[in-house]
Length: 327
Figure 1 (cartoon, helix red, strand yellow):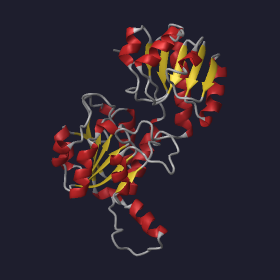
Figure 2: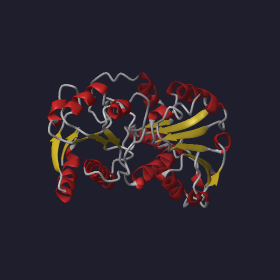
Figure 3: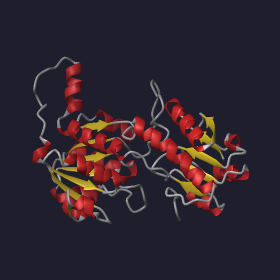
């Protein structure tokens, strides 16, 4: 099998070479993001591997004409792919899984940084202000943390939190017995009303879009903290900004944000970034805004490349593909 790997980064090269050789797959490395103009670079390949750039119907049609049978994204999220067009053409779409510890560890790091006011402390320290004014934080053991979404990553977050002595609440449409031994499952409104910190770990779907909005924020404790290392679309950004400005939300840690596509993973120094919401949030001393890097560990990158290759190989060779996205 031959696979065209678009948008590959240099840190991925060793893994494409390693797993291409291990699985007998010829990998065609393409630095550019997919576009209608370069879709022909995949000619002769049965599969393509992509990341979070827009995979439009036009691109998919050109790939189909070039003989591509399956599209694999080296990410958990797949909302950037026009799956309906791919399915219409009889093509397979798949995502990947990767080390849950990458995002779970990062999530707990963000919680601790936010409740200990690290952004504020560091900015003040850079200006040689070593006073204690407004720097006093909170201890996690005295707080209640609500985890929305208890899949692999959410469960790992709860496991990490179990060592801090805090009360942990959980919400998911499909409760898990293993999680129930570490946290207390409650309904959505109870979690909102009783949590000092709320961390999001659900996929981006039409149902989950703006699950954190003006209405849900009103049900939260005054001064609650919101952490999002999942998907930007889970939060209505304008409503979050309003709540931060009013003090209803005390602080936020955001590794993702709405309309981030085309911004993160690029160097935009000295350029105008067309996302006003991001600019507003980034200037707030109580908002820790990071560039969608929770996933970025050596183990996770290795997993993403390997599983993308294996996923395509499974499809081409007619085997069961655990990462295939079904209609």
